[in-house]
Image (tube, rainbow, N blue to C red):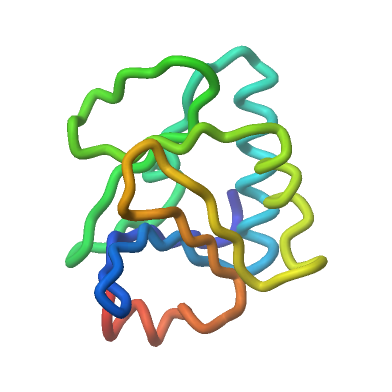
Length: 126
């Protein structure tokens, strides 16, 4: 994955949010990566392995198909559908952010490719 994705667990306006941020190309590349991995028969993909995880607000996130027991009790699980992958692949065609439900809430998964959560933001808050 050539572009940088960043991942962290933050509290925005008193709501916990799992933030995954990058530019449109990085989000689309994630969609391609997930499709390839799931098409090859994998049941889960560790998103935290393909993203830069915040040192101050770390989080583990697995995109899964079917049943999956994470190796870490604090990991977040996203049951990633084909429709979810399609939303990632077409990042930016209709919005600058996406929201996905996780198996335990809060938080929800907030995918941003608006440019707001850029390198400067991450170096200050991440």
